[in-house]
Length: 173
Image 1 (cartoon, rainbow, N blue to C red):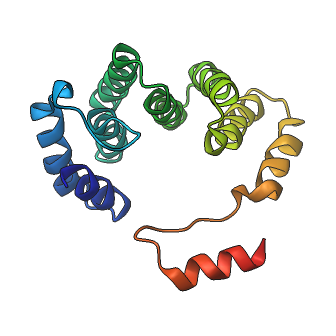
Image 2 (image 1 turned 45 degrees about the horizontal axis):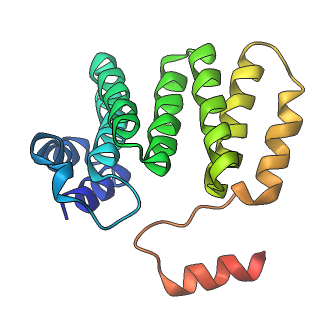
């Protein structure tokens, strides 16, 4: 419940309150008790917390939480959570204006996504890598980024999912 609330509050722009919930997970999560979803709740909390810290103006904490998310996912061998953590790391590095770090993370996400069939991360990794190339002056990246958007990366469905919004979005495909 803390993870769902924390993530929701990040998306709603209530970063201080989100961090209260996300900190509870980070401070008290026991991986030995297990979890039922595909993503590790602590990794999720750290990843979303990295965004919240960045938006609140604390770059150092954003980077620290991002690094911790990646480390936790690697330690636990949860490759889906590792894809999430490294995607969020790429975004944090993008916020920091570090295209080389974005490229490193995007390439790692792409490799994981390709090897393990995490389709939702393939286009995201391409977009992030394209941003890096574009920032470094490679304007051919625009074509690849446009192809990602054309393949379906141009929609957003907020959570909680509303049945009519989902039906409308599927009808457009």
